[in-house]
Length: 434
Image 1 (cartoon, rainbow, N blue to C red):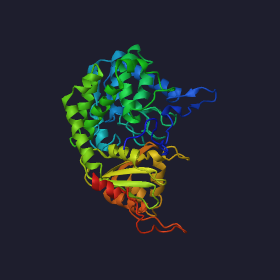
Image 2: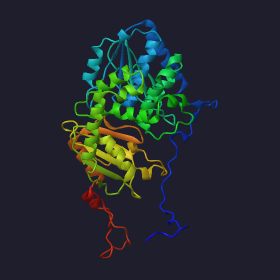
Image 3: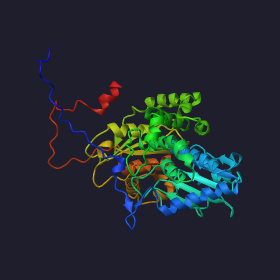
Image 4: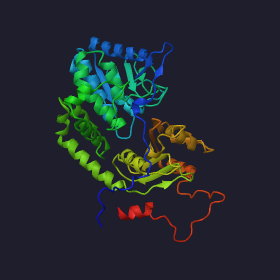
């Protein structure tokens, strides 16, 4: 039946949560009232002095970026800045950590040491206390990071954005350091800053103060092109072959973002990951007994667990739900790699959800030595996006502490549903359809 002229459908009464803009978080200020962003000024000044000295003395320099868009992009920003400052490109080298590894492993420290670098610049690797980046009294190291940590390797010059909201990505932090060192950095590296930042904060980010004005960058390069670059750069490290060097070389050699999109291997890797994500993403979640954590267990040689966690965080809803956890049993032998994201429906709750604290609170329920057995790679990253790499047996113990799959206790006075009142829109029905 046709609708009568002049009538319109009833407005929807469904409430959609409005999320605050990332940049609207108030900044911290010092005792004089000056804004502290993206990191303390003393750290920013020290980092610039380190890079100037590195270029001036003309000695071998090793760049150690993380494997994703927000690691590789600042790596290229540093590379181009040092070359602009006069460092001979032949003195520059890169070290990319192995699949599932980190710079603190002994074999990674040995591999970096064998490069015989006088200067080492570590970007977006996540920080923890411990021995120097490499052994050697004459080696100088700089760490640029935004992951939550108050501890750093011994002897490093560290600049960290983790305590100064709105927390800058490593690409943005590096851009803010380097654009003061040479006038070409702002014009030639703006798109690298955008690629890295969108890689961590998403492609709907509004660039509002204190973030820099990127109007000229977005005039030259459309956001669609830059966002496509993010998925291209991130794809190789997610594949089973883990050819991160392809992404690094593509970024380093590109004169324009469109050069990245013409790289056949990057396009192939992205298609490979899209297929694997689609294959794994319909895994049904099981919930912790209190309903706060949804756990999805997958088995894939590809690093698709962070992507799937992000997808489910945007769609799964309940009054109790806080965290989406995707656990990958197939990425590394004998280990579970898991990624956690805050559910979209819980992002504006008070007090704010802190994934790292929530994970540690679960582990603290253990009366034995579980925390020690899980090691340093448990609950790393950010308050809003955390995860870890732990042995399979220990992960199962963690799930047992969360009581994953157990039905919640009935609330006193709660009446059971009458026959015929069963919910029709269930997860079970959804997976049958898909």
